[in-house]
Length: 482
Image 1 (cartoon, rainbow, N blue to C red):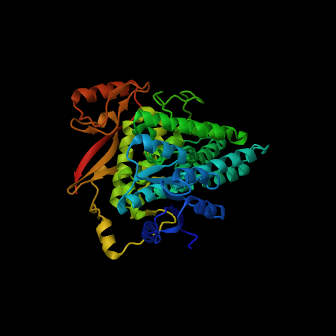
Image 2 (image 1 turned 90 degrees about the vertical axis):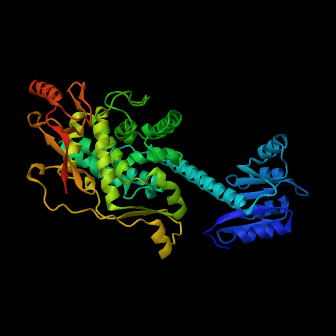
Image 3 (image 1 turned 60 degrees about the vertical axis):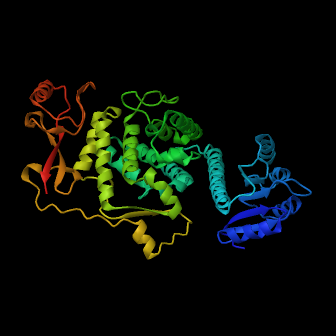
């Protein structure tokens, strides 16, 4: 018996089938076999609590559905698979309902079907356990934390650092430590804006706490920002999000921190999801945490299209070029969504990136890897050569043209580099391409991002700028040969 293996129980009155199943699964699981329901119940009562139970329906003394129903009294979290020779729904459905089965397989089933069913069921079992443990820990924390009377920052810090441990299961889906990066980026933005010390502390704590709002959510919702998923899933996301906020709001000492986290998905222009706690209000503190969170998600979260391979192989890899490309896309994303945030806050983030004043906003120039905890990742040399792409080498720039000093690299092609440069309206030239939405201080759109400027547009921009209706410099794209 290996205590580190997941426990699998197989029940069937056919000895040959049991021996075959034991041989197939014993390498990966702690397998026990029983020839009937009474024997299996005694095994569970003795302390063997399986993650997955596979049971035949037709057995002497006790049917499979009767056994699985009784097993819930002793191992309620076990995921149940029922094997049945029935082919009609009217015969199958009563068995599934009585057994509280997660799935059924028709006999005879192929070896591949059984393996896939067991694997899927163990994934479901782990999700049940993770969500149950997280909910229990969160409820325990709420009960304990309501006893706290004095709102001291060192106490809040201990609480938040403890609570962030509940969401550690999500850490492996990032190439760098998510909450730490978001907190450092948010703190740097706040300090650059010269916000008062109390606000800076609240912002930092909110950045550390925000990931606990994902507790209990399906992974599909964690892997995407809510405004990137379909409407029905987005609605469900916010139901779970605000349910977690309601738990946090019960901790009175965290009230100003929770107030920030609750606004995380609001928008400055009021276009965000209806917020039952804060309405359309989107404070400076919340915008700063939101910007930091979105940036890190865009650059360092494992891409959704890579998740299946990641969960199969247990390892995900991102090259330096991929990080640089995702960083550039994140910058473009903020420009496209400029109306979501206050222009002054967006400008601070933009300047920190361009001037490289925040280490966490500088793309990491080395290969990044992340692995799934407790998964035994073994890659031989052939597998590595096949599955892992070689790191691309960025062609060095021999000399930056004088007119491109104080610029930021947006994209690197084989024969050219696209720079971003901030120019005054008087320096704009026909043929330049905008790298931002040009809007007035009142939020009125003048020129959209990625538009080629002509003389008429430039004249319009200059007139508005001379009247003090624009925010200042205009970001444009400039292409230079390597």
